[in-house]
Image (cartoon, rainbow, N blue to C red):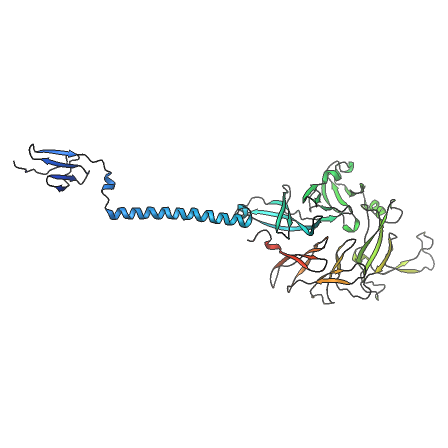
Length: 457
């Protein structure tokens, strides 16, 4: 029988496009249907195929390209995941916290003190924490830091602090360090055993009738005047308050009367030893600048009045034999360095030495540290020295190993075995900002880079 067929079409989709796979057997190029001719009945028989036409139509070259692209994508994703885990672990091991990349920290002031369990000091910083890329409010915290071990001992958030709250501290006669930030109305005590802060505001001032309206401003009285505070209440009244003695003085005259003369002393007054530099005298120009050691009678915690350098100079004091305060006729003068009777005696600790631009940077009952220039040249390099408080001899002298620098007069702190201080230079020939820890023998125990202490960026 004849097999002539015109325009043989796919019985499934009607397409005439086909491919002969063997005699009388065809595959539709459009839908993939396989069909064949039955010679006996001239029938077209269909064999359905359920293969994905998109896949079956891919040639081996295209399939290879697709597999390569998919493999590359998987490889990149794996590498990203691996490197992310690696660097994340490296960051955590180096800084102790993944937050190190989220903010940076700096400090604008610090305090140093001793602890009973260590021969080395602990440093207490006011930290300012700023977030990268954001303009939100800065955070403030007090950080207790072991500089020898490079270890943060404690962080205390100070949620109500501000940028302007520069640290001011004072060592009171009870042996505790108190902190009163500038422009604040709070006072804190440093717990040197636990490395924490204790808010003393309510304990010190809470029961005072004079401050019932509240505290507007609070700050230390000059260290020369003792363990006290200058206070302005919310109703605008000013007071001088000495919390260890529980004494409040509403005016200058009352305060002056409490700190002058022997009659104002209470039973149990003691003599304490102090040091001060004298000034050049116009009345006695032959007298040079002297390092004076003096004994002062006082009640610890009560008002005192130690001399400033500019106040202490040799002068002529007019004698009043009658004590009336009236001077008639002829009278005599007496050469005096101290006129106040609470200064019981004094000596020139270094009679054979000359001083230039000298000042006392730290003193206590056993230690004396000074700074000064080596000669009269005001452009000379200043030094820090430890002085033997009994003989006046120089125990050690320290000069920073840089060309140009200044000492920060607010940052000299004694600790049990030495001194902590700061020197800096913010101009040419190069910026430097260092904290130095030195022991009683003059050995530098540690030098810290203040600019990169908590943030290397």
